Length: 527
Image 1 (cartoon, rainbow, N blue to C red):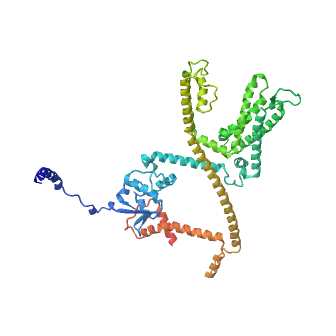
Image 2 (tube, rainbow, N blue to C red):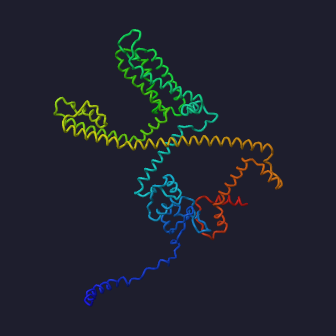
Image 3 (spheres, rainbow, N blue to C red):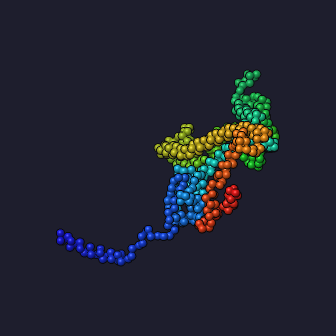
């Protein structure tokens, strides 16, 4: 025991000597001795949820609402709290910004509601931390695109009714864009759709071989050559309808330059242009090949169905929104085709009677292999060629399958957006119909009440009570609305105006919202 104490005695003496400099320094003051007003605890009540923080914490950012004197407008003297009728879950992230200096974006909250809260508290979006900045920008961009698509879908649907003095161009454009607005527009809508179908079917049928029944010949020729007049008359009727529609759309378009640059305008021109070129160009052997090539563009008339089909429009919007993913797919396929075509050419170069005569000739084998078609017209014969062909097939499946989920998700998103827009338009129609019905009923009752002298002032209390009982629903709703507006306008300012009347003894914040005019209005209201 004594040996143990003798061993630890030098260490104990060294520790005591080391503590001497610390023991000679004065102790720091106790935390409760502070008397500065800057260290007081502030209580912030956000929709019933109380938050406590130091005043110095809020004063770090004087350019914001909570860090400036403007927060005094929300002070409740009875409870000694700052009351904000805002989202308490959002305020938690705002208060953490004052504490830590880093603003985080909540994933489970709406990005538009988050921006509104930041704007209310005077925080700029650039204060979002680096850990959440990229996700915040992506969500904000996606939300902006969704709102723009919803607005575009609503504009494409039934818009508000045109005024009585609208011009012919406005009525025509509304009839073209919204065919369900009138019977004539709906009839023209179905007529153009019928002629589009006739034109496409005629373009297909005229290539079918048919025999001449009169000559009993064994030689078959296309129906377009067997009955040229019938197909020419059908083509002429369809082109006249398409030309008239195009000219009327061009006349009624709000912006003709924008209409001429649109995709649907180009489709209309390509659909009718081959017919007029065929009428102007003489029929001879020198230009027959070019004329036949030009007739191929008639097949683009099928794209005119996109005006009549919501599904085709959604598909077009999907391809437009997935342009970057489709570009990545095309670039990846191009790289893989070049690589595997080069490998296959050198792997099969030494064999006799090979079909892989060059690298461009091997492109066909690579394309049909990567897309899993496999026609069998080009087959590798060497072991190395078969191995690289198998790798080419597997890599093609992976490359093509990667962008497919993104395209499917975009299609589903745009489809649901259009569905929501259709539901909103239907609800708006029902709401407007109810408003018109209620307005017509209450207006007639109000006019009848006015003709009976019900708006004149009554003298006695019994006469006033009788007048109130005889009031129409329209007038009662009007007075109730005015009463609610008065209470809403005056109630938030009564406490501050009372403090202003008590004199300058109380510390008042700087009035930065132009409250002097509201104070005068309140005084006149009390008088």
